[in-house]
Length: 193
Image (cartoon, rainbow, N blue to C red; front, top):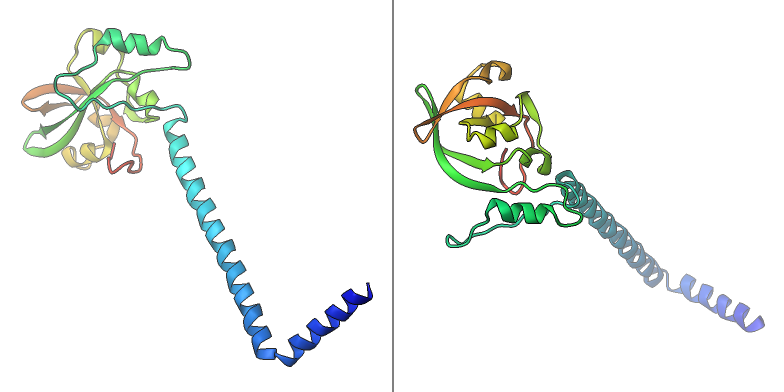
């Protein structure tokens, strides 16, 4: 115990006699600790942001992309995937670019998704007006569509969403009836829905 007290007294004498060195050491410790706290806080904030973005898609969402032209998925394979344990729903889709027009207003670079009624549920998308696609639409190969809110506002200026439902648009020359308008969502992976 006496040795500890002696060491402590020597430490205090050295601190007092070397004020500049001691203050620089203390400043270095303060800057170091503050930097570590800031970096941990930024890391936790970024992790929380990524986690909330992933959870908005659904924690169990898995997207499989087939990029080959000679490989495809048919409906029996989709049913096989749906029969797997822990799979709640499956929504196959195909994306194409198309020219969409209404009267004299045209959008040349519209992104068209051909999909099933489960797509909105899987991707956690909502309807602003109208209805979702139904299995009857799929079975009858009805020429119906949902449109995004940004496309709706560009094709139907100053029209309310409820007035857009029931209107027809041309997709690459084919007429489709609008059955619903998607609710606005933020960008995800650079895509707007």
